Image 1 (spheres, rainbow, N blue to C red):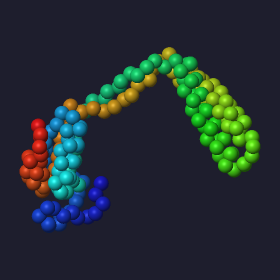
Image 2 (spheres, helix red, strand yellow; image 1 turned 180 degrees about the vertical axis):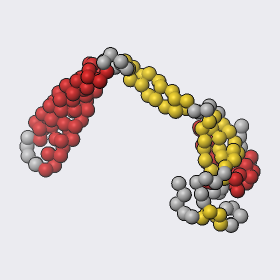
Image 3 (cartoon, rainbow, N blue to C red; image 1 turned 30 degrees about the horizontal axis):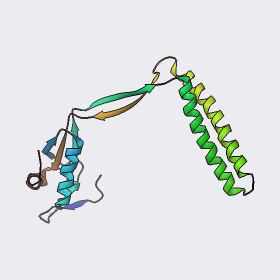
Image 4 (tube, one colour; image 1 turned 60 degrees about the vertical axis):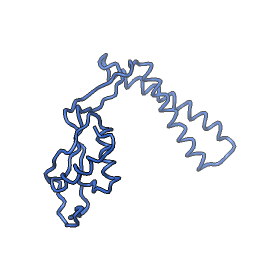
Length: 169
C-alpha cells in the first residue's frame, strides 16, 4: 500500500503512486526464494523496490497431512493448553499476592488447568468431529512460478539492473 501521493524515479522526476499502475514481468523463477533473491539484489543496487511486486502464478492449495487425530490426542493437547493457562494465572496471582505458598499455587494451577483442558479438548473433539476429518494437517498455497514485476515506468531500468545479477538463471 502506498504511503505517499508521489514517488521519485531514478531519473529524479516525481510520479503519482497508484495501486492500479500497470506492471510488466521482468523475470520469472521456479521458487519464491529465487524471486526474493532478485528483489534483494535490486534493493542492494539502490533500485526503488517499492515499484516491484512478486506475483505467484499457477496457484494451488496443498494440504499436507501430519498425523491422525484421536480423542486421546485432543485431550492431551487440551491438557497442555490448560496447564499453560494455569501457569499464567499462577504467575499473575504470584505477582499480585506474594507469599510462601507460591509453589503450591503453581502446582495446583497446572494440575487443575490440565484437567479442565483435557476434558474440554476431548469434548470439543468428540462433538465436532463426528468421525470425519480425523487427522491433523497444514494447508498452504503454492505457485508453479513466481514473477518479479515492475511498474511500467521503471521496468526497463529494473531489467537492466537485474541482468547484472551474478548467477541469474
